[in-house]
Length: 186
Image 1 (spheres, rainbow, N blue to C red):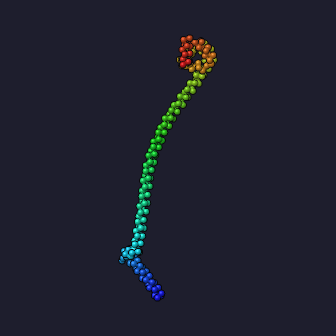
Image 2: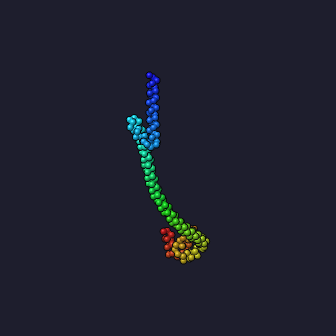
């Protein structure tokens, strides 16, 4: 009895294998669809069909997630690009303003340098004149200084030694000397 049972089980497996192989062959040829046949079987059909659906669904779901992720990244990049563009325009505007300011500053610096040069030249001339008047006879210096404008006279006297200024003012016309003295204080 044991040998018969083994032979029956082997024949049963052989038949199931032949049937399954036949279904796959017919599906390959295109005569029948294996999904339709296997779906009729309670255990195999359910597992086969749900597995196929799960993989397709999972693949589709994964592709959707990737697509959404890429769209989010694309939108973020577009937003960032917009921000960068706005900042770039602001920087370019600032650079233009800076160039204008630099130009104005260069003009003012040039003007200042010219005025400084003129001032230094005048200062040198006044110092030279003060030296001349310092070395002159106070009476002669007073006569000449009386004929100059008050500002020039004051600038020359400020560069001379105090004792020479005092003597020169004494030798000047008293009215002119008082005007010069009053203006030197202010």
